[in-house]
Length: 426
Ligand SMILES: Cc1cc2nc3c(=O)[nH]c(=O)nc-3n(C[C@H](O)[C@H](O)[C@H](O)COP(=O)(O)OP(=O)(O)OC[C@H]3O[C@@H](n4cnc5c(N)ncnc54)[C@H](O)[C@@H]3O)c2cc1C
Image 1 (cartoon, rainbow, N blue to C red):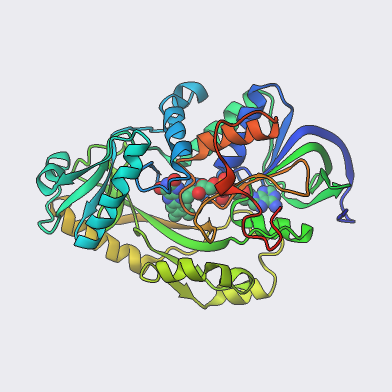
Image 2: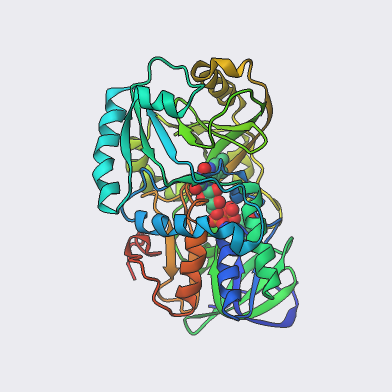
């Protein structure tokens, strides 16, 4: 199947590998390929890291991961520990642990169930008592807390820095990174991906990696490849400098928060998101019913201007939104700040200096999609990270580079198969 965009021109450009999308997954893949001497180019419709990858809250956690993801996350933590040295940039990486606080019996039971999963993979995850929590967090004052689930090897980093650092390191190893250059379509011939149609023109490649985040299903649709992901809007706010010390832990209590190195705290609306209804909801909604039922307390649906804009085709074209910049859920963020105050009264009045939101690309089983697409030789996908991909970025880059190079990845990737939702599985 050949799709062409008539107004565009051919170029003589040819790369071993081209990557669509300059989020953490795309640039980490390009970096790992460039390290091996492969010629690689990344095409990014806006700025590197502009969408999800810079908007994340910054948690890098193994704790509470699905069993299929855990081996990858464990390797990712090892890669994070040396990443600043490897990329030659500060990423504000801190490995002080992840702590999920317990306020009710149900959460406590869920956490207890997860501990053996972590242990089976060699993690030191354990339940802390309320007293132990208060020792770890000296300014924490919520008397309702019963304890917490703690994994000391988890960490956090600054999302605004990481994709940019990967891109810089990739460039230094001769990768080409084209910003503000969208990819309109993928060309295939005889069952093989062979070129991209970009704003620069046609670019040939031996292999193509689609790491287009929230846009992946739209890019793959003309090839009739079903990638049922839905956009979930997550919101984060940043406080002013607070006179408390969270000891660089990543706590997840009534809200989720992470103190930055400058003393400001990123507060996120924890375990909750909004789905702005649109065309993809109609296309894929049925596949999400079990997840929606399971998460009904945490998920809200919004029928508003997004739906109209989507129906009018605003999100069909990759140049209309160079960087998706959805409206933060200020109402919930203000509530979140009030919950934070209950836990940390000594922080004083919380002023939110700025807030932002991002569309996370969720899959029906909340697991990512990684692999070569059956029936399309040389076409690979790394997308659908379901709101938890920032921490996985380093290992995904390593794995995708090995997949493209036909090396053993060292991981069982069957749970992440690109065709697991198709009627005719490849
Ligand atoms: C509010 C929020 C909080 C989060 N918090 C965390 C957290 O604490 N920890 C965690 O692990 N994860 C977190 N996540 C999830 C994490 O950010 C994502 O899973 C991860 O960044 C996904 O990376 P990506 O490279 O797949 O996607 P993206 O970063 O979205 O990158 C995809 C890129 O592809 C580009 N693109 C798309 N289509 C085209 C095209 N046709 N041509 C050219 N370029 C194209 C886009 O412009 C975009 O830059 C959070 C996400 C959000 C939104």
